[in-house]
Image 1 (spheres, helix red, strand yellow):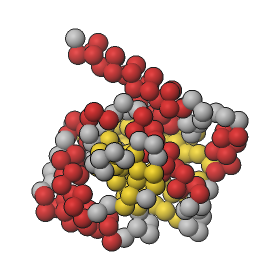
Image 2 (cartoon, rainbow, N blue to C red):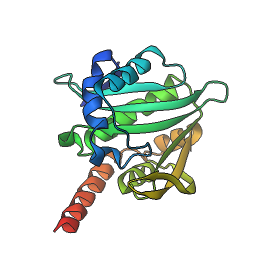
Image 3 (cartoon, rainbow, N blue to C red):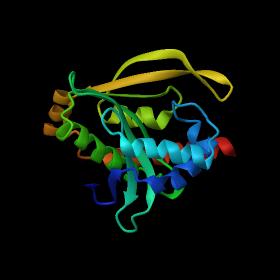
Image 4 (cartoon, helix red, strand yellow):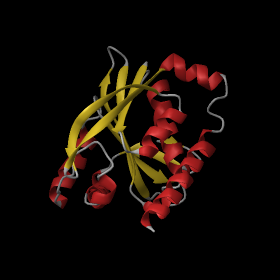
Length: 207
């Protein structure tokens, strides 16, 4: 278990499919991810979660849970783990419970997972990707000093159109240099401000 002040991370358990089924079925939530929008049955979802609980060598799925109640509110996934070349891909962070999308839980879960990647998996290079129009994901990675390595044009088809994907990365030495300089000390506040700004913009667009 990886424990923070608000949330903790643990490996998937078989019964987690009941939560992930609801979130995978939420197209408004899934349309902002790089993965395809897929129709799932409870049995398909149960088998999917079961596969994540029995194999954590190349891909690790971590449930994001509240410290106070043990309720699962989302998940964090690490994929393409390559111990020879010491690299991996942060393939997704999903906060399924809407009331916890305020930035604090999102930030802490990401930090706990990153500490695990660096200090336990001993990775040297960490990559991440997001849809070009996913402003929050891009802002969070850039606030965390990830480097934009390139934009893959029209790489994914979903929501009836093709989407560009932004590819980011950060190296172990870069992370420790920023940590030494205190660059992450106000990152939680930065992310909270980003979330507030985006919510205000969404309200303006909906009016």
